[in-house]
Image (tube, rainbow, N blue to C red; front, side, top):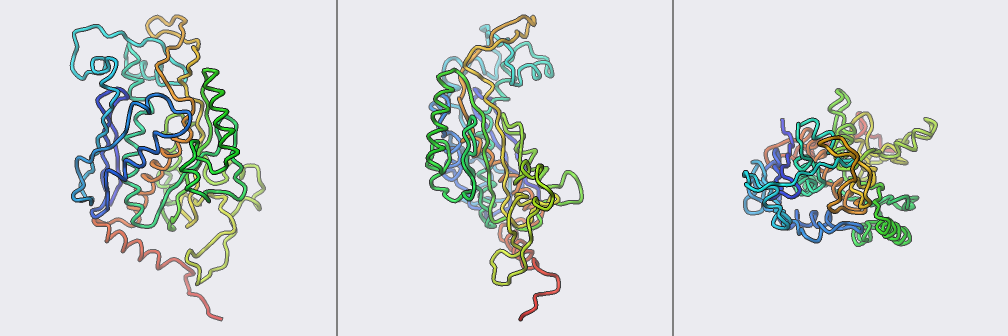
Length: 397
C-alpha cells in the first residue's frame, strides 16, 4: 500500500533543518524554486519578528529527485539556519562537547513546552526543549508540504489560504470566500478586504507598542477534491480526524473547525445539511450541493466539495512584556526571559496550514489511487472518477 510519510529534524538555532518525504511516486515535477516560493510565503506577513530578516529560507534537494522529477525514493530536504552563525549559537548549540560554561536557561515560560518538556526528559536547562519546540521547525514542514503540493497538482488538487481574524478584527466573509487569490497573496496580512487589512495592521501595531502579542484564525481551502478520500470504517481512517490532528500539531493552534462546524452546533438539523442537487450530465463536477456547510467532508470521507478547514491560533506565548514565572532549579518566583518573537503569526500560519493539509491529502490520495509512477496514479484517478454517478444510469428525456 502506498503511504505518504514525512519527518523533520533540527533545532531553532542549530545548524539547520531537515525533512524526509517518503512514498511519492516517480515522475512528479519538483524544483527547489517551487519549494522556495512556499518558504517565502511562510516568512512573510505583517507582525513577524526579526528572525525573518535574518533567514532567507531555501531548501536544498539532496535526494529523491533527478533532472527535475521524483524518482520514487525518499526525498531529502535541507535548510540552513543562518542565525546559527550569529551571537555564539555555534557554541551554545554545538553537537560536540565544549570546554566553556554555557549559561543555562532556567526561567519557565507559561504557554511553552518548557515546564512539561524539562520534567519529561529530565533536563535542568530549558534550552534543549525550547529549541526543538520552536515554530522554526515549521519551515521544514512547509518544504515537505511543497513536495506534497507538487503531487496534488498532478491530479488537479490545489490549496489556498487566507486570514479570517487577527486580534478580534474579522474579515467579512459573507459571499466572499477565496475569490481573489491575487489580492490575498499581495496583502501583508493575507486578506482581500482592504478595510479589514488596515484594521488588522493597526491592531498589530497597537499590540507591538504594548509589548504584547495577538492570535487569530486562518482558513485553508482545497479545491478539485474527488469523492472517497478517507473512510468511514475505522476511527483512524476518517479524513476529518486526520486533518484535525495535523492542524492541531501546528504551533499555537488550539482549535480546529471544518466547514461550518461551530455554527452548525447552534443550528437545527434541517438547516445544517448540504442539500444534494439532481444529477446533471452536463455538469463538469457532478453531485453538486446547494451549500458546503460540511466543509467537503461527511462521515470521514471527502464528498467532492471543497475541503474547508480553519485553525484558531492563540496569542504567541513569548510575550515581550516581562511576565511572572518561576525558575526551574529551585521553583522560586522569577520573571520570564525574552529573546525575540513575532507579534502575530496568523498570515504565516495559513501557509503552514496549506502544507499540513497538502500532506494529509497526499497520503489519502495515495491510499485511494496509489501507483509507483504518477502516470499510474492519474490512470487510477481517472478510472475511479468515471464510475462516479447514479448507479443505474441517467434517463434521457
